[in-house]
Length: 115
Length: 137
Image 1 (cartoon, rainbow over the protein chains, first blue to last red):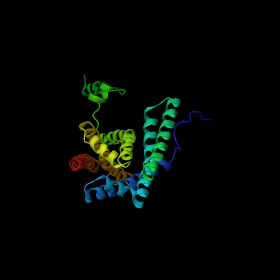
Image 2: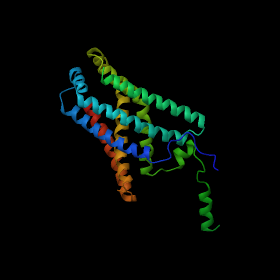
Image 3: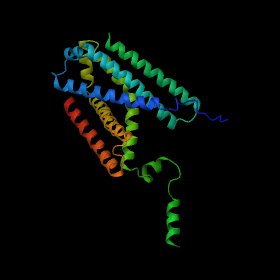
Image 4: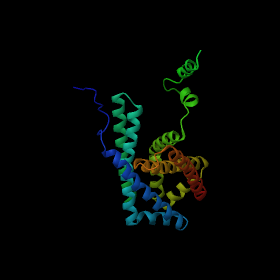
């Protein structure tokens, strides 16, 4: 029986790979929309900026963006850690740190959007 | 010494493992390889900078006074330069990412097209960075 299974990887499968591509598309569409909105509107004052982020669609779209970013970045950073960090303990510690950071960023974004 | 033996001799001095010297002077990465490593570097960089970007978004939406402070902060040349690097990272990651989506669908995977699209990614991301830099300031 093989005992050299890598414990600090992920699911050895397709899910994160596919999710990374789907989330990429979501973020790409969001980016284009936001750039068009910002470039086609009035000069950005505090009022314009705040009104943009209090609209329902913008809140939901931004939440969708940060959720996509969370999954996308997790897959990407995990790939980098698997490529360059070989000691399992250190890799696991960094992976935990990354997951906690990403969770905190999502929570923070929700707080920013619905304050 | 025969021609073949000379070639074997020459092949023997190729780098056997990665080190800084090999990375900088001995390994000539083809353009699609550069696009690839820059995609990784820009992605890592964006992830590391996320906390800073979120902080600026948080402050800019906190109050009118905080918005004005962030606007002033974003006008400092060090901040401008950092933001411009991140704008490039985003544009490069975006353009290269779209190229990879096409490659995943087996579109443009032949050598000539892959090289051409690499140049396009490089040029488009730099042009977009210049455009946004000009728009922002």
